[in-house]
Each structure stands twice: as C-alpha cells, then as structure tokens.
Length: 107
Image (cartoon, rainbow, N blue to C red; front, side):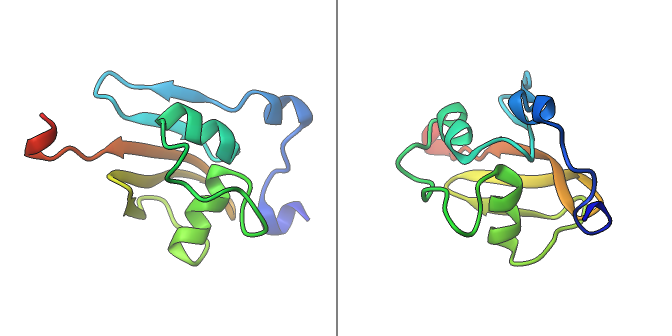
C-alpha cells in the first residue's frame, strides 16, 4: 500500500498536522489537515463543500480540484485563495501553501 500512496502516517502524525501562518499572511499547511480544520483556519466555513466521498483532507481537496495526482509547484485558484503544492510524499500531497489573493478593493 505504501508503494502506491507513500508513507502511511501514524495516529500521532494524524493528530497534529502542521499549520504555520507566515508573516506575509499565507499559510503552510499539512496535506493531512482535515477539511473542517481547513475551513476554520481560513475562515471559509460557508464556501468550501463538506468533506465527503471525494476527499477528507486538504491533500484530497487539492487532488480533487486538479483532477489528478499533482506535482510540486502545481497550483490552482479557488475562492480568492491560491493553493500551491510545495511538497509531495510519493503520491500524497504533503504540504500546501495557501495564499490569500487580494484585490485593490480589499486593501
């Protein structure tokens, strides 16, 4: 199984995925972060679809949005946020950089 999906995380790794808010307002997030935690951190509770059959984690959301297993540096824009894959663990999205996209009206 690990040959297909990469290292399978332990229960301890699942319990505390990394969440780092950077000085520029962006977030470096672990791909194992749950959708519910992602909604709370980014304050997008009403925007992001509920976790379901297609995905339960940020990594799953990224793969679902791209439509395929991503590569490092691939990105997409969604709800005024830019999601960029910054690290992979074989076929698993390991780290994602989430950058708020501001318009002139926002500043």
